[in-house]
Image (cartoon, rainbow, N blue to C red; front, side):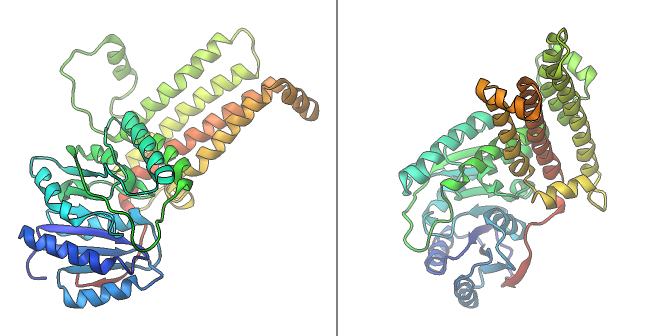
Length: 408
């Protein structure tokens, strides 16, 4: 393509052989009406049907169509990340490849973007999906995400969005993070807006999502709140700081946010241990041990984040563990383990269960429960702080391997 595009349309697809041709024709019609130089990037996420064959035929007829094919399925987030990386336009539109998003909404998104926003989200107000399995979980999740992250978007899961390229290219995407693009964009200081868009029922193919992802989304919400609290740049307040705020800045470097978060998490356990100090038992030891462990974990995480900022030639052992062994999402590995240990600790407090466990293990039920709960909290926090390390090193690792480029 001789002329550099102003507008890029990014469409991740996986097994959408019946949808890609009519979708491209609709996108082409809309983009030609807009009048700016454009490109359409279809990212084939290792489809097993004839999706790539159809796209290859289209690319021979349309020089505006760029086709990127992965060696194997890497997930929608990886496909979107690849599209954003290779997009050459100043403005980028993302959308699903299943014909449920309507290309005719693209001009409205661009108009809103031109009002001074960096990200414009589509809101499927009249969503055409199953009510109980798709819409209800989405409503609940969006409400929680808005409350936790402070980004009140009605529909975080809608792929139809408009971006300023200079902003979205700064956002690190991996591990199903595409659902949290509005929240994650605040790390880059994005100005966000939302407009209502059209949503159509699926005509061809099968949906790739279901109720099975609900528990993962809940873990992700906690992790992303952690990430935002540590990595988001906050504007300096014009109000004078209170005494406790000045004391906090003296005790803890204000730039070392991971350590400060760890300190705040450890404080209740230090206090609990001091209150119970008179009865020196396993509960007191557990409280103090957990507090010290959290501070150590915070210090270690801060050290790893600073190393990531230095862009050393090789990843550290801990970073490699969280990125490769945990597949970038340590909270999804350690989170459920921590929750199970917490539940076990609660069950051991039941008199009948506690007495039985005491006889079998010859350990007081209260002590066993305290150990289980303490370990559960520590394991869960290990996963959360691992998310911070994985995010800090996100730009250094790719989750996909491109097999074929067409028209690029």
